[in-house]
Length: 460
Ligand code: URP
Ligand code: ZN
Ligand code: ZN
Image (tube, rainbow, N blue to C red; front, top):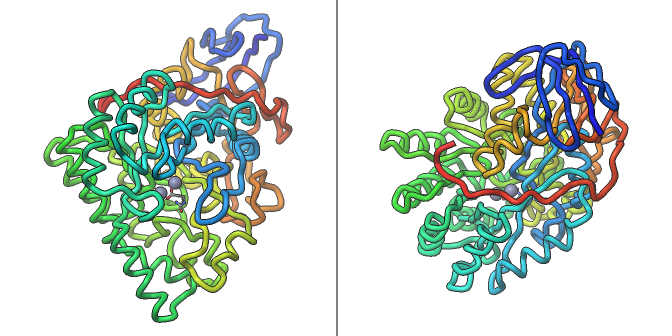
């Protein structure tokens, strides 16, 4: 099957130019002006922009968490992602403390294999570092193509590891060619604040926010950065939200250290005033919580300064009835919010259209950098001869409104209800197949493939 995309404006992380794209099978065969090719199928992209398919490197699909499961499965989550222009996700496997990494991998394979619409990979969350884990890390990297290892400095008793385990893990991962990523908040401080608020009868969602002040993230980010400096491991901070944490990264640059930073769309666009809406605030209960306007300014600046390399979602949706588990106690509200479908269009609208970032920076943070950082470039994350034909044809001017009535995520509310967005994904291609066109799904469950990733480094 061959496809010719004609008359589009191609945007990559480095260039913007008008050209046609000829796809043969799953990959891009050639790119050029006025290509004379007899293709099986032609797409006229006049007036549209052609972008690399989005890669969301931070999603939680069908994940057991806080006594329930995140409500998007690998099927519903990857389909919703495709509707919004994200052709690949990296999902999180959680090791159960006391059990092996392979036990966790097999559990997640059971959920994902054959069930995805879009392409996917896994990060492995190490919650129990021991001698067996050490051996399995080599196998994950060499055999399974899982080259990033997630750590939690919070969620004590379930996911958190201590600093001794962190340093041991970092040394092993560094020696084997992998990356350590982190949820960097100080779990002990947070648990103390949660206990204090609960004992004083302060139980509404606002106290979720007040239990995780900026300093809890600033402190843990600084500690993680220091341990990464000491071990020299490629290091990546997930969902960085605030000025204090950003300044820890700035401090690291002063000693010539390189740390990768991801923020998420919600931290750029939403703020903590949403927690003042009484229980409705539960919709935005996530960790770290939403912050202040000044933190949004820091994050936009961080993107433009090249200190923030990735904009992800931390998609971890829970339906209204699941959020109600914390009706009388904020600490029981499942943490997470839905965004997998909206990241690409929201960032286009709020970032590019409002001229906070350039179109090329947009491609860099949504596709190219995730592919480079996590060992998939140039197979993924770019428009180039030989790369997978994962593409978005986006109408840069079409306006639409986000709503739970029209979204495809398996969640009965929208965190962005009523948001007016400029820019719509009209056609989405996954490895040379038209997956979505004008809102219609043209591929089947099982089309998504697991992507084995290569070794990583601090140099991208
Ligand atoms: O609230 C969040 N972020 N839920 C998902 C788990 C995590 O910490 O990333
Ligand atoms: Zn987290
Ligand atoms: Zn997460």
